[in-house]
Length: 111
Image 1: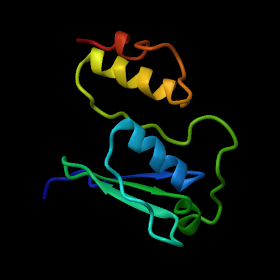
Image 2: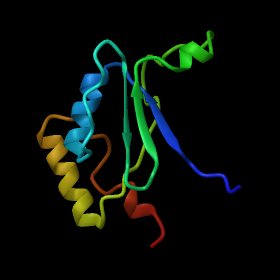
Image 3: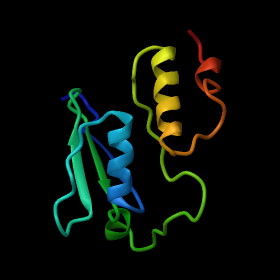
Image 4: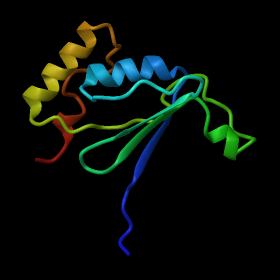
């Protein structure tokens, strides 16, 4: 059997805020079930995105949440550079923080 990516999991501080961000990004993502700090979104590619406030600590009692910096990073495909720029501008206009310069990461990649 060929190894395939099935799920990407993000341990977040606030599931509801993360759902709002991913909706602003363009995902049609469900509300988390009442009383459960988790939501799963299955993408057309078959990969699921799981957002939760507690996972690592359940399986690793020594784990502690980083106090600063990135906990994890995902990249979503939205099309060409113009679509990336439009999405960036829409998200930052909605109040989401942007880090780095627009296009700085993709401009260094081989074409």
